[in-house]
Length: 346
Ligand code: GTQ
Image (cartoon, rainbow, N blue to C red; front, side):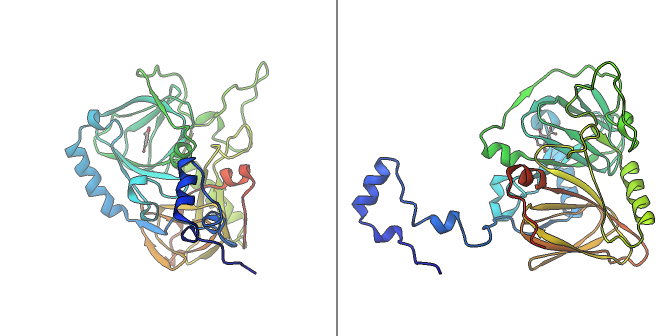
């Protein structure tokens, strides 16, 4: 049973003006807007950003805007449902495709939003995070969690491009987003990955525990891919072949707000992901597939990115009969779970 609620036009104009003058607003005309029945209103529209359309425009940005004038040379993958100027892929996720040309340097800074980079193309670049120089290769995931210094450099010969995923829209909405510029970092031993790169054995600190909140900063694609392939071989009947990027000291998600995963689809496989509350982003690392969400069907090839709103099932189909497909997925699960609003509707 649902009553028609009173509208703003049903009230005397002078009364509404009296309220406004006192910074007061009647709830009932807006109640259904902020608490819609059964399912949230989602501005996040299923959206596909083909890499082949982004790359030439990003390279053009490399000609038009020197790195000194950009600091970070990024084209933002903006969801039209939120309005492009909002620069958000979903309520909590920001996506950007970043270009670094040989010998360029994107100076050191740190900020409150958490970021990760998924390397799309090119060799020879690195991100120095908290002093550790993390090499960038295709498919690698590099964390720059909240508050850690990071800068990008490039010793190679060809353009390097990566996908940035940040929780910027959420942190900005919280009025908690800011940055601080810093000097070039002093490089310390480590490449963000080696100590923790073998699952099952982690460093033991006999004298004191690691004080690092983020002990692992780089997750090499060669390791994540090998884990997926082993999982597929060891579990031939298992439908979903997926790994989660975790903090190896705690087993929790690698970052606090967004979740990061790698998935393998077997040749010819169709996988229906249940309708869960968090929005999701899919990025193809290797292979090609079809993604269906609401009434959109996207043909995704290598390096393509798409997003899906929360509360919707997503069907992924590997159309290749003989090649597996590998995906990077980012979602808002850690946020939803911590806030107690996570739902799986099947
Ligand atoms: O590389 O530090 O896409 O600070 C947006 C903000 C990348 C970065 C982005 C950033 C960065």
